[in-house]
Length: 62
Length: 141
Image (cartoon, rainbow over all chains, first blue to last red; front, side, top):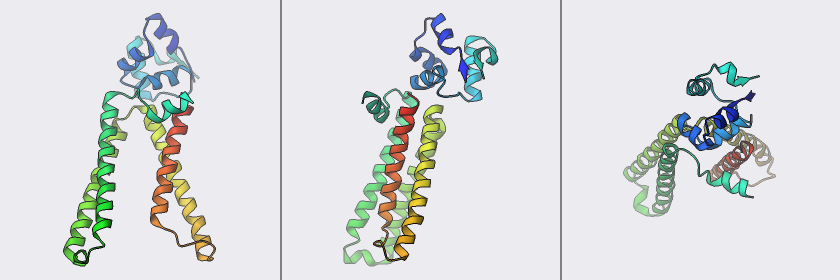
């Protein structure tokens, strides 16, 4: 699954560790999601969407 | 090589997960130690009475149940990608052990292999579980 997480994070000047802290997951999880190696669960996708104040479909695309 | 080392030590888990993992390790060490102690004292003659055997069974099983509950809590609160890695590793471990047990039983019944020791299955299960975790962590790096 493709996503814009890396771009959105970079726009806010956050590190992967910063984002991981906000989402209460490990830095490896953020890294794997950004690389498209791991698809987040629906609750985590909602958390990401709330954090960036965007719709899930604007962040993630099939 | 550094990828492999990172996969083994997994230093970047959230503090809550590390705390839960350490708790599981403490329970697992206590369970293994209780098993070793009971195996050691079982050589003594006084151990053949019903009371010490019952006490040993209750003691070891109690610690075992504590270990299972600690692991369950660890999995429940774990970072979601790490949880997937753990569950994949558990599935591989149980699957490999079942298939190995079935295959070995055929050889055992045919007299082509020595009698199967339960400890061999525990070692196989532990090794495949550890290998599964390392493979999973490397895959998602």
